[in-house]
Length: 98
Image (tube, rainbow, N blue to C red; front, side, top):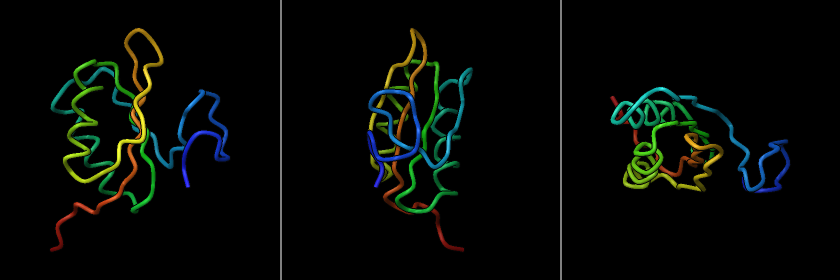
């Protein structure tokens, strides 16, 4: 189970323990969602992806798009004037079988 205070070692209050981190600072929509979707597709259900963005529309659009894809948005934390950490749990496998 992931969530605040569940082991790990993140120093940020309220942070979820991420299995992977995707730092896409410097990129803008829609590339932020495309990169996030590709990263979560490589993960197993139940794993948590931390996405770091510095583009405010991405901080709003990526979580909304991930929910639309069937993933769980655990939290969005603004950690600086222009920096957000998005925590997404893979709840659904969206890869298409060959």
